[in-house]
Length: 178
Image (cartoon, rainbow, N blue to C red; front, side):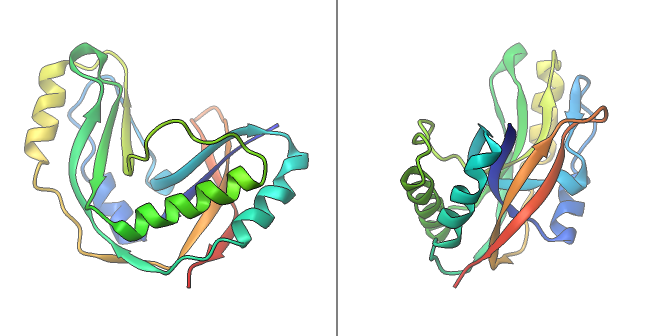
């Protein structure tokens, strides 16, 4: 079994800015800069025999390239139940369109439809018992975070491998946008 997801790779200067946001929250496990990405569609565990079908389906996706901006920070969960800190994405019809095209392709390839609503974000940290006041301060101090637009010209199929130091995301194939 392999664990897969489809994502947008972020340019190094954007990853560096995101990595610079980290710190100041006890109980936060910060995402390594090389692992920062924007998930378009989580696939999950599949048999290696399905990989070729997924690859063919994704290779057939046709969507235009576009520019993207990250805008603001937020959290999933509230209070003591906060579990993720994230950087937000400025509304992008092109990104939603890409998500829909990828979703349709994967369903046609035999995968179950994604049940969760697409909520584009970049995971900055996973939280465990983080003090709510420190999470609130993190968000307040970084509320004006925003990047310049950056180009998205491809999307990537990744494998997530677990290791002692946390997950390692291995790009398997890039798919060009029109």
